[in-house]
Image (cartoon, rainbow, N blue to C red):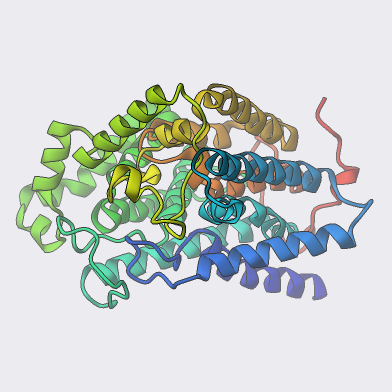
Length: 425
C-alpha cells in the first residue's frame, strides 16, 4: 500500500508540475490566462531543486541524472552565457540583462523535478499526466474561444484572430505527438506496454482540432501535420482520410466555420503569401544587413529592460523570437555555423546515451526543425526538448522494449535503480 500511495502522490504532484513546465499559465502576449512571473517562479523552483538534489546525492548520482545535468549545463552556458557576453562586447549591455533576456533556456533544468517524480510512478501514470495537462489546456482554449474565460491581458495582440490563444501550446503539441505515436505503434513510447489505439486516435483528433480552431497558430498546425507525416509515413493516408471525414461537416455546412471563429480569409492569404508576414521578412532583412555590415560578428540579444532593447537600432517590431534560426545567426554570427551542428549532434548523442532507441524523440525533433525559420529551436523550445530527454531517460528506467507487453502496476510499480541495468554498448 505504501508503494501505491507514493506512486499516487507522485502522479498528483506531476500534473501541476507539467502545467507549469508546459506553459499552460505562462505569461505571454498570446496567452489570455497567463500569470505574470509564474514562469520565473517555476524556473527558480527547478534551479533550487536541482541544486539541492545535486548536493544531497554527491557521489551517488545515477547515470541518467549525469547525462541530463550535462545537457542542462551545456545549454545554459552556450545559449544564455554566450549571448550575454556578446551583447556586452558589441552593445555594452551589462551581463545581468543579457542573462535575464535568455532566462527561458533554464527550462532545461526542469529535468530534475520531472525525473524525480517520473521514476516513482508507472509509465502509464506519467503519460496520463501529460494527457490530463493537455486536456486542461484544450478545455481552457475552447472556453476562451466561446467567451467563458475572461481575457487577463492588458491589450489584444491579434486583431485578425481575436479568439485565438496559446494556452498550453507545448502541452497540446507534445500530447498530439504522443497520441499519434501510440496510435501508430499500439504501445507506450516509454515502457513498450500495450496501449489502446482507439482512445489515442480520439485524443489526437481533439488536440488537432484545438490547434486548428483554438490556438490558430500557423507554425503549430504545420508542426502537427509534419510530425504526422514523419511518424505515420504510409499510414498518413489513413490519417488524412480520418481527418477529412472529421472535417466534412464544415464543408457541408460552411457556416460552422463562422460559428467556430475560423478566419478563412487570413489562412487563404497565408497560403498565397507563405507562412510568414511582412514584419518577419523585414526583421530577417535587418539581420542580414546588420551581419554583413559587421563582418558576421556575434551580437547577442538585448533586453527591453536596458535602453529599450533593440528599439533604438531597428525599431519597435524587431523580435528575434519571431525569426527562429535567423535569430540564432544574429546572436552568434559566424559562430552559429559551428554552434548549431555541434549542439544538434550533442543533443542527439545525449538522447542516444539515455536510450539507444531514439525514434520518437528524433521524429519530434525533425518536425520542430521544419518550422525552425519561424520558431527558435534552442532558444524557445527548451521545455519541449527537456521533456523529450526525460522520456528517453524513463525508457531506460522502465525497461523499454519494442515488443508489446502487458502493463504491470502492483507487481512491479517501481523500476530498479539504473545502476543495475545493462548499459548499451
